[in-house]
Length: 415
Image 1 (cartoon, rainbow, N blue to C red):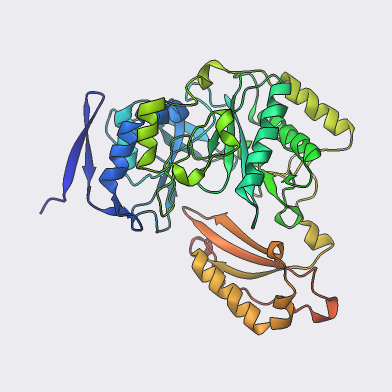
Image 2: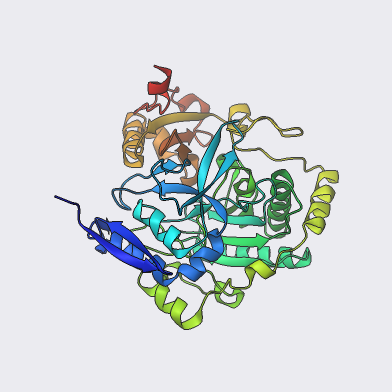
């Protein structure tokens, strides 16, 4: 029996949506067809953030409540109207990634199970010079969205003072993204350096609520993740539906909306209504490409004041001027790994078992002492949980044990 399918027309081309009635958001009952219809309704806005860019397929083939897998390489059996471009990654490997330019191509990747859209910050015709600097505001545990909004407004001021225009959007989760179009004259390293300069300047202005510190154990408040600008990093684009129970959308905003916006107000159902009524708040972004010159001057000033390069992601080669890639806890504070699991809930269960084995130490932990990290595996994410024991008196600190569970995403490949 042929599988159920339906057809959506997108700008003159018919796109087949297979298994249209498959539930993708169990909490709300939204289906795969609902997701496709959403992207068809907001295609003009969604394409503004992804058009002509290489695109990482983040596929939720079993819906938003299951783990996705990442697919950099375009499927071998793709239609001839699907474009690809070859990228070279920091590891030295290459892959032909999909490039999206039209509504039909967008719906084709949605049919593969892509809920959110994850483009690179470059265009397919120049893969070495980004045209977008991305400011990712990532709140730590217990940080209020009010603090995120306050930090976003400081980001706007820093960008304005450095002759750049920021375009804010909700992340679709707990944070805010600010995208900045830049002229295609600078390398990935220079764009990252500009983002780091923004992060450090915001931290200088609001040290009580903002941080540029890479190591989680040093962070507080809202982290400005400058490393989202390193080569091969992708971020969910504007108008992306996020894999949350309520199918929340990463919504472009006007700056005067940021101070009192509610991320929960923008969903797969409400966002198309806003788009039809108000259009896209980031409609002018492509005409606002600015120069990095002043930001790089700010970076040079920070370096003269003693702020050298900051840590890079662990999968990158050691960079010139980069500080040691050793967490401060390994130098000064006792940090132990208690769980490594393929699924987050299994790792959290391992943490609870550790707490039961060491109740005295567990009672002295503070919220920020438990570090839950989403780690990138071969084609999917996994979860690592570490515990910082610096609030536990030395004589009461338990020794590090084998992680429970002890998942290793690379075990099968080594075997």
